[in-house]
Length: 390
Image (cartoon, rainbow, N blue to C red; front, side):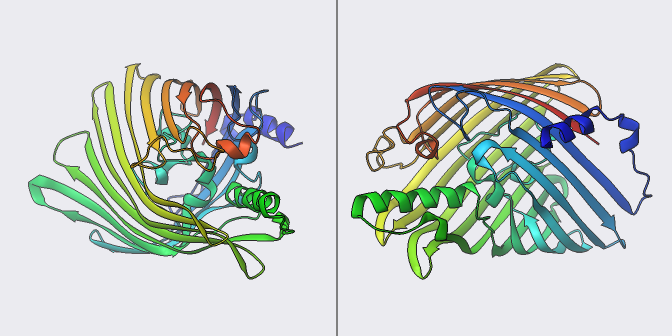
């Protein structure tokens, strides 16, 4: 039923999407359908046989009530196999008061700044890629890391001929759905400990909560056309419990992302470097304590306005000190090296088609969850996606 409804929406005449609500209120949205196929390993679900449950629907509304006060929000349906819950949810919902360029306040469910692209993650038409580099923009955590409930102060500081700086300071809590992948993965931990120690705990009774998240972001806009830099930081603490008993604790002491992006004529280059210092405990036993390292380099070229060709290399190590240390005998390859080629074709102002091919070495992140019988070190996947935006 969902596929039929999506197909009808995609084939509906485009002029009917134009909503004339004046200058005060703006309504926009997007719909997409994709196809994901992998060999050797599963990714975001049972993808070795091909995955067509790979779609998004989003509708957002913004109302500029006064010159300084704005409210807005977006409802998002996201179905990426087991990598999302397949339900409509509140993607973001904010009330914003902008006193002046140097100072403003936001309250509600606010998009979290993390690197260059996390805040634009649900705007598919703004980037050439289908999947952002997974070393920093892990798709399995998208539903929880996209935004937080809380507050933020922000502003723009000008430095004359040197350019300007955008800043954000935020704090609040993230929300986890009971059927989110993060909660499902924590349930897998319960099942594993039941097997090892003869426990009788039920994964269905598990709840996952975020105690806090806070952070800061600086984005530099120097007086060089096409150049942008960024530095973002966040810290958080998650807990999973069955009744009053703690199953898992994850404390990110600090996640730092340094970013650089430059565009010149038909060319663009982006690079980001990230280190995350975290400690993980499962049933009061420390299972991880140390820093991870991630970085990528993305090159894009547009020979004509409608076509963009991209190539990126993305690398992640679960532990910097011992990059090849197996994880509990289950994940023998706790790194991820990804070489990808991407084609984007803008069919019209409203329609965009993309295709990607990835060649990978390593099984970091949630590969053990999707591959309980073990995962191969070398594997590939291809993705196709068609998006309509209005």
